[in-house]
Image (cartoon, rainbow, N blue to C red; front, side):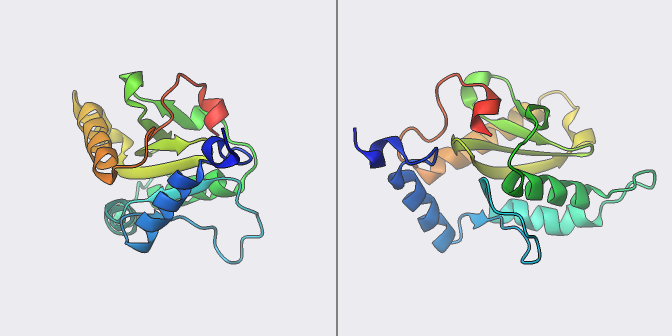
Amino acid sequence: MTQNDAGVMGRPPLTNLSTLHMFVRTGRLLPYELAEDDDRQPHRSLYVTPDLARWINGDLARCHFSKRAVSPVEQIADFMDRFVGEPVMHINDFQQIKPAGAHVYEMKTTDVRVYGWFPAARVFIAVEGALKAETTAAGTVTAIRKRVEAFRSGLALPSPDSVRHEINVRELL
């Protein structure tokens, strides 16, 4: 097995990295980057779909809860900044949704859920978001999971397209 097959220092194999970069160049994925005035160094990679970015900057940005000090859009921006820029993440911030074999994860803030998957450790692709209150109806999370799986299949990433073995979420972070 070569270094490229195994990945380097916890990063995905070059075929996955180059494929993700191709999707960035073609606009199918957008890299989430720390603000220029943020002095933290990236510890992880985060990609979002254009639809998720539009939802965050549109519907979510207009959503406010009068009893919350931090708006939903501020919650998700803080979460994404911490995911990319903090050396340690808390495993409670992520939850693998059922069925576990689908390898779809939920990023959790107080009011917002973002769904996606880890194509490799320390790399998350965020596909869809919802307010926590909107995810309580029966079948909602299942429908979101299926849309995430369909998006992942549509990318036709090199196999494996997600972390397929049973792994503790701590090892993905």
